[in-house]
Length: 137
Image (tube, rainbow, N blue to C red; front, top):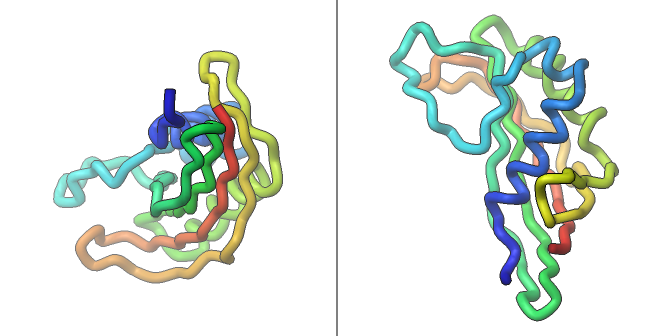
């Protein structure tokens, strides 16, 4: 069975949800896609979005090297995006990933520091950093 990219995103999401330092800031608003209706003024921010950008696969050995983006959004200001990001970075950088409900295992490493900006279509501040995920399973 080939490795599942969605499983990698869930593995990272579940890891972040176990970190009280992250959930104290964003609650359960850790998502695996840009799903939000940004015209909806009731949307909850700040939030974290983990997005798969691409990668390489060895199907015979179930090895995967994936490039991921970690976005942090805030309606308040850019400082809050960096606060949320730094908390996520502490929880994610150079750690082993595993969860009892998933067969995939691996590690995650920050490969590019965050860039910041204001997204007019989202009407929120953001920062985005790049991670490399190495997984098996």
